[in-house]
Image 1 (cartoon, rainbow, N blue to C red):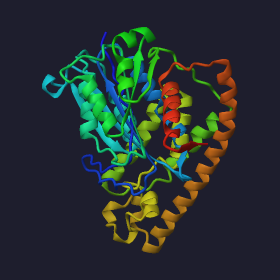
Image 2 (image 1 turned 90 degrees about the vertical axis):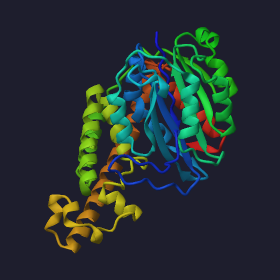
Image 3 (image 1 turned 180 degrees about the vertical axis):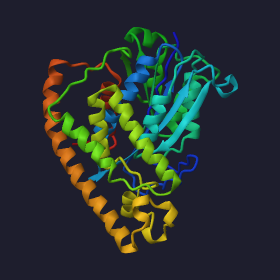
Length: 374
């Protein structure tokens, strides 16, 4: 059975460039969490990939409540796949799909694009590649975590896992290992040793466990409001039009899994971690990265092209106000929903899934660096 390695790295938003995309600004504060999600897309790991797709928004929402020194955190995600035959052996059967980014829609899109296929899984090689090639923060006061999950021996490949794990520690990066199988087998195949070397935590999960989805009375209203949020986004330029389409596509992907996943995504969209200043005029105006008067008519959406400059500015202000009002409603409904779900979870508790072990581990390790959770 092939291993799937999930390397989840929460990262400070480092300079990231995608084709036709503006370069992300390097953060100036020291309140970030780095996460890299590295999935071995070899056979037998569809269950783990499904968990990652369905629980991305839940994990983001949990971490979005954290603060450091009283300030909200910046959350960034990177995505790898490895262990696939289609990726050449000379490249280690691994690929960095998305560098560190705060573009959560991009991460969601790529998770839904993943397909499993047989291959060789080299844990040491993929960890070392992530340590060497992702743009990690230099400060060791910030949270830099790797989660690597799989079900094949941790010792495979031409890069010694101990070498990779020791280099991670030297760079202030914690490596947590998640074995998809029995606890004892993971110990015997060196998954626990990898975590021990890197000051991380060893965990075993059932990657094929069915996810318990709980329907709450607030779900329909939150989903509707989440869709209303999309109308407040003003895409500019060709890239903006592409990203607005992606936003709608990721809504559809979430809905295809369950109402609960769409609810979690809607909550993410109503929070501070969902930032789109590289394509949305409301966010761009807010952070000062774009001046409306400097945009060409062809870069504007059709509804703004015939407006005067004063009308354009007023329109952006209107969308900003409407968005804020919708976000307040979503967050209020989610507060009520969280209480309802918490009670139901006591009746259907499953702490052996990807989101449960990740959230618990990150909370524990974040507190060691003075991060606080609401």
